[in-house]
Amino acid sequence: MASNAFPQSATRVLHDARDDERAGRIALAIEKYRAAIDAAVSDTDVPTQAEALRRLSVVMHRQHERGVGRELCLQSFEVSSALGDSTLAAEALNTLGCFELEAGEPGGAGDLFRRALAMARNTPALIGRIEQNLGIIANIRGDLDAALEHYQNSLAASTLARDDSGCAIAHHNLGMISADQQNWELADRYFDSSLRLADSLGDVRLRGLCLLNRTEVFIARQRFEEARLSAEDALRMFDELDARAQKADAYKFLGVVYRETSRPVLAEARLKSAIELARECGSLLGEAEASRELAKLHQLMGRNQEALLLLNSARALFVHLDARGDLSDVTRKVADLEGTFLMIVRDWGQSIESADSYTFGHCERVATYAVAVARALGLGEEEQTTVRIGAYLHDVGKVRIPHEILNKPGKLTREERELMERHTLYGIELLEGVEFPWDIKPLIRWHHEKCDGTGYPDRLRDDAIPIAAQIIGIVDVYDALTSTRSYRAAMSVEDAIVELKKCSSWWREDVFEAALGAINGTLTAVL
Picture 1 (tube, rainbow, N blue to C red):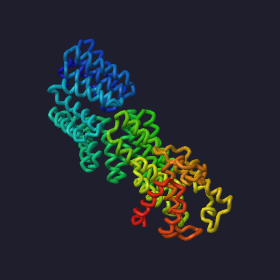
Picture 2 (picture 1 turned 180 degrees about the vertical axis):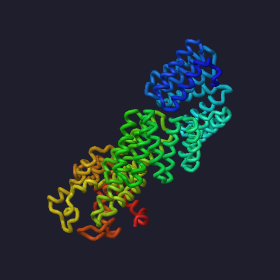
Picture 3 (picture 1 turned 30 degrees about the vertical axis):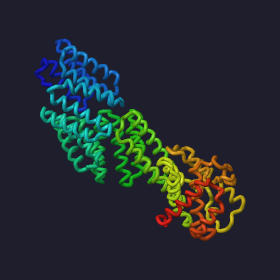
Picture 4 (picture 1 turned 60 degrees about the horizontal axis):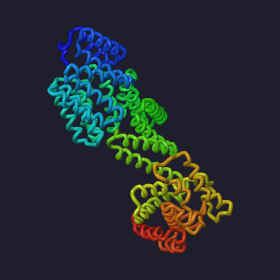
């Protein structure tokens, strides 16, 4: 709003406060905003009073005084409405919408933004800011085309108003959406433009956001040293501003950089700091993303149980965000997490087999066969994933079985056999602290159970044995028969099928028939 709209004394204090806010001198800005309010009341300058109340509400909200911030902004709206100034009232509604958005209420925020836009009329700078916020709502809902249109409208309105701050924010958000589309070169150009404008304005917060989000672009383009410097600069700025959610993101990116440049100790420290900070300030998205990145680090370090714990925690947070409507691409994020789950359990299964040339590749083959059987039985995608994960980890308990027993060339003694059979229970013990999104523990415990009651460890019968455990059990036997072991040579496929038919009472008839069909169907691909 033009400075000549206010008496000089109130206007000067208000503008000085805004300059201090942009420069990160928050305590001084709060003092001056309050002084501007007092001066405006004294001079009966209602427009200045309304704008100073609104700006102070924003600062208090960012200082984690959210109740105070909302009350100040409501006062601004009431003062503006009583004055009949639709532009100032629209400013207050737009700010209240931002508060709703940060509180995880995009629906209510969208309503406030649309009301503000209808009142903004011919105020291009304000229209530009409201269009930005409507773009964020569209982005949250996954409508990238609508988001892009709103951001472009914002840039056009801000350019018309010669509002460098609005242009800077528009360029920043266009960079964000370009990054979401993995158009890294375009994203880099938008962030660079935003950064130059933020520097010219002296806007520390916006400069920090540009540096932070540009870091992701540098990482994607494997420009790790530039990423490190960018994240560290952003961290310094957000530390001065006490912007803890953004500090958490900066630590997360630094952890990723150190992980990708083979500095695991530094990576772990930074990622743990990110999780702790995000948790402190209630940033569920920040905590989820940092947990996912730490899980990937633990996988590289061979700390599979810790990795799985973190992944499950991250998945629960993403799903919670989806339920609140805070995250547009939760389906992709959860799918990425499930892919990482698969990668970790596959690596874990292979690490168990790596010391034994006879069984190497066993879990991978069992998983391939088991999914084919599950598909033949008409099980859904979620059940197929459960079968796959269970197959990769069905023998995880064998890490506690002595090597000399696992590789004994002759027949096992009764005591050795009893110890070998305990691998199903050892597997459950190993995973005791790990909660999976899929119910795989019964598959690990019961994949050696048989419908005739002769299996182990619990001597279950018939339908008491989950169908997924039966699937893993039959393909486990088939792969053992057709693989060379320390105590015998591999059987031919034909001889193995003959042996399976001799034992058909161990499994449900439909499972047995589906297994025979799947074995024949996947044989060429596997071999």
